[in-house]
Length: 480
Image (cartoon, rainbow, N blue to C red; front, side, top):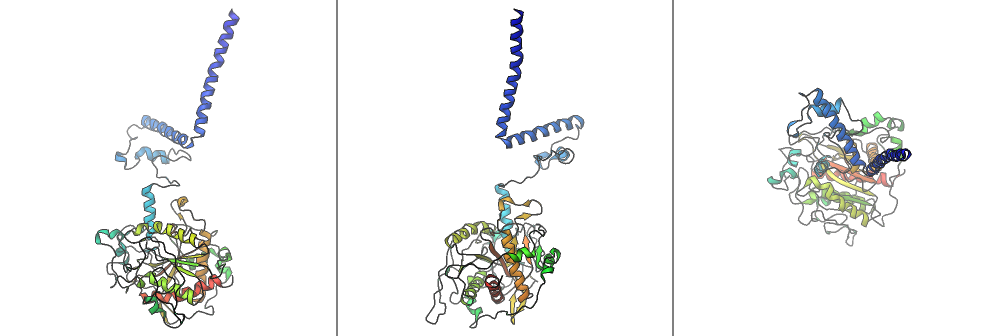
């Protein structure tokens, strides 16, 4: 009888640990599939423990901040004295792959204006309309200054001044807001001259400023280099950045991305003939005008400048170019890039032969700044190539603005910049590097080009298309 009781007691002794083990295993299995919940529980448990310790030993100091304005002393102590290892203190700002709607809206607003508000040296233009780092000023009137030149008009009412844009208002015959249009080959008369067409056509439209600026003769091209840059100098990172780049203080880059051998080693030439579209020109900010732009005449805005570039590339260099004139900044400049993206994606899908995408802009500078030089005896607006790195100094690489073509974007802009420096010294400003994406992730050979500023004349901007077209031809069709 004693033996039986002993055995029964022995069974009871082993049953308890088995149940505990099974319970622990179940919990472990549950949390293996819920890693985020486990991390949250771990963090909150650690915080609760630290909170109790602080309240026990420092009851007068361990307070919670009122109204959530800050994390209080507890939060500061946890962040600086008792860090939680790799886990983040829940009071800190944190980054996730998918930002909240508010923070993503802020990114869109920054991106929509970040390529502007810098002077000829790349310095941020302070306007008083808001933080220059955000690029969200109190309308484009702030960007260009209160004394904007005659002929520049706001497209929106004063009530909508947050997104009001200086420059000529869109032509009534232009494309609808956000509309996607692909071009047809240019029509011509019996002498082969282009004739008027619809707003989505390639080439030139009748009576436009581009036709006035083009003249009868074809533009003169540079035949010999004015300056030569030794490769050993270009391979010096400091020399390269000091002479060819303006790096905004909100982003970072190093020699692994800015390496002359790698940038010049990429073959960016066109791979097929002009039987299919090769180049797409469009305008994220189609409403950008110049000092003497005419209200209501889109041909005197950056769109008209794009018309003239299209004309030169097609007629003088035999390229197949689509000039898309969709409007994405009317009434809501802050979302211009996000609105232009789907249209750009659709155009590239419909025209898979397009190899080069050019987003043509006009910059904004102080009213006392004139971005002008002389090319072939003509007063010419200076241009600037602009690259987004999808990286900020504060947060590092921005995962939700990923761009697989950053290296290609940098290569084509540098090859353009170098060719311009060799053949047209002084024509270009330094390449501006900033932190966001600017829709440069849709095509490897994407160029964002700023043509002059609001203080330039329309004719100066038109004149800039002549050396720009020559540089494009040299880079896209010349020897590697």
